[in-house]
Amino acid sequence: MTTLDVSATGAAADAVAAHVPTLVGDRVASRLFAQDHTLWGEAAEDEASKRLSWTGLPRSSRPLVGEIAALRAELEEAGYDRVVLCGMGGSSLAPEVICATAGVHLVVLDSSDPDVVRGALTDLGRTVVVVSSKSGSTVETDSQRRAFEHAFREAGIDPTTRMVVVTDPGSPLEQQARGDGFRVVNADPAVGGRYSALTAFGLVPSGLAGADVEALLDDAETVADVLAADDEGNPALRLGAAMAGTDPLRDKLVLVDAGTENVGFAAWAEQLIAESTGKEGTGILPVVAVGSEPAHLYDDGTVVRLVASDAEDEDDGGPSAASLVTVAGPLGAQMLLWEAATAVAGRLLGINPFDQPDVESAKSAARDLLGQGIDDSDPPAFTDGEVEVRALGGDWLSGTHTLETALDGLLAQLDEQHGYVAVMAYLDREHDADLENVARDLFERTGRPVTFGWGPRFLHSTGQYHKGGPGTGVYVQVTTAPAQDLEVPGRDFTFGQFIAAQAAGDAQVLAEHGRPVLRLHLTDHDAGLARVRSLLGQGGA
Image (tube, rainbow, N blue to C red; front, top):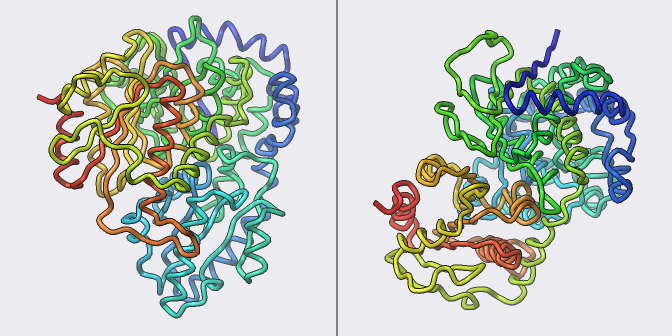
């Protein structure tokens, strides 16, 4: 039988003891799974009324299992065995962890980098593409769709035989796709993107790639009644209280892979927590720990150890933290658990966990910059070798002329009690994967939490927290000139111009919120990246 285990010690245990009895008394769990949209206050009622169907997905998504199996068999018979997913945020993160955990290959294209996009436009003879977008208006996904349609036609392949569209019923994308003869699978429209793991957005690409999506739903369904129970042992109530009920609030949640079978789970949870809670000047900042030991420990943080379902219930040499939570369970069960716990955390924080008011601001700024042209609008403060340096959000860069002093100036803005550093890299997350290790290096240098996000995908994730959460972050943005640009078919901009606008727009909005941003642009990718890796890793030593 599928089981979930959530245990807490220290400040997290105190939060559980303080809040769970009240949550039980208020029947929060049963009301949540009955889709009571009044749980988060009057201001949230309208949005919540359209976003709670995820609580019933373990059962309501069952018809998709047969549909996906039939489609996969058809495609396999035709010899198409490479699945590419075009999607962003909630449309891509869940399938990525589902497939990684199942040990099946899925190519996830969630970038606007022209070199990354070009790399996905290969092996077309054996490729099936899933285009996932709730509205179809996500510019990244629309651009990727256009690129694949063009590539298939150039190769003499009818794209309608190779592309599957997942979208909400009645969306502009559905109307266009059906009109053009593409296969369309509708998702539940009453589920927000980051809660959509068990909808068609999570299941279709995963199932086509070979993951057992029926087992995923089975695991979730097994625990659904437990999570809906008004009981002090309810794992969702316990986890939600540990996340958002500490006093004073420990607003850094450090996610440590301590042997869980759910590969890459922390990256999925990061989006769910950050985008759901980071608003109105509050929120929980998820920090995906690089490596498992020693854990990242902060006075204002809670450590979450993600352990295997069959882990021994004993001290295994893991971190000793003043606030510690240990979570175990199979993937489908944990996805439903964390969704419910995040909704509970939103109630405790007094915010609406289903909107994302600050995500659109960066999108709008990017669109404006595309319309204006950005090549010469933002000259660097100075250039150090192969790296152009720009600074926004204050005059803290004054008088500096080296990468080292620029970074020193940024880190001098860091709140030593509650601050964090965010590294945002608009690079190739496969070829440049080593850069992610700077998060650990900067933590060692500053003693403060460091997050790392690949652009532009983090814009649909932690990007909400960066702008809507507490104003305690400092930001390092890394961009590069593409090896070769790529046209977006049918658009008047290229992928290179688009990703440049996304980076510049995000930095602009952060600065407007009073956040200091250090922008490092690599004029030569390899040499510049080596400089930046050394700078961030060793503090310029």
